[in-house]
Image (tube, rainbow, N blue to C red; front, top):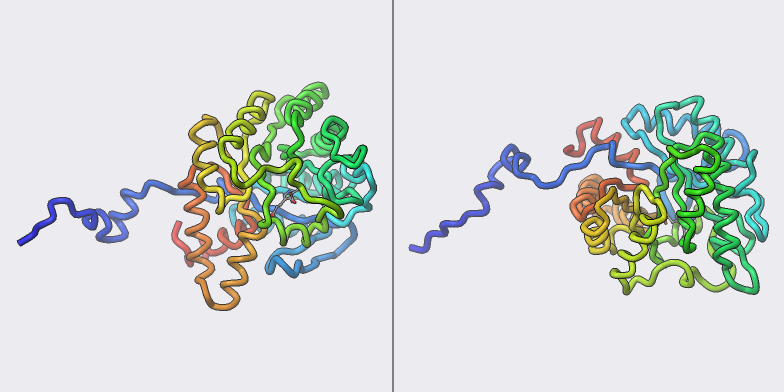
Length: 329
Ligand code: PBG
């Protein structure tokens, strides 16, 4: 009789032993919840392409962030949307603008929540590109000067961390210097280092009304065929002073997360983006997938690939499910 000496199933026999030998775990301390903020009062606007996600005015945002905090979500990423747009994204670095106001309100109401701000211009430019246009092109060096101003405006208003997502060259070094010169030496930079030109951002562009009016983002965001290039991007940002490097999107780029983690020797973040969220929501709404199980599996797999930190629109839901006991830790 054939008798296998090696029985892999022995260590899968029951939940206790599976937990004992599990190689991956994550907790709410690893999750960041993104929010879309708008001007006005008492606004909670549904986003058609992202069921369960809303645009909040600052008063409502504060309440949502406090609720999230009670569930255990201690870090948020803020996007300012619906501001007046112009060619040079003035609203993005206005000291009295939407994001500085939101930061001040949140610092006051939820002082132990880490406030991270996206630093990018696509929500604020009339043309929808992430940088300033000169001679029909996104001008790298003009853009990073103004990104430095935006990062400073956010730091002055109480941001705990800034996250440049524009993909201009040299922006991390420029922002680091701008922050340091004003004494913000302790504000970390979470750099969107390997940000791919991706169709997975589709729902976000509706949420933030930031689709480019002409052309696409391929002259600054990465080509999805490349991963060695992601290592160069991360290395460049680290050299310039990034404290955490990010890979975005997450799910189609788990290999990139894995390579960057092995290469970078520092904390790696992954952005589980809008399209990844909306696919799950759409399938779950049709009864085709079990939402809670799928979300737990997705977050676990991003962590397993090497991400220490995950930005995800599922963060608050996941925290609630944990509390209810409807997903396993
Ligand atoms: C740019 C930015 C984008 C996202 C985060 N920051 C959009 C883009 O590059 O087009 C996408 C996030 C998501 O899809 O969830 N400010």
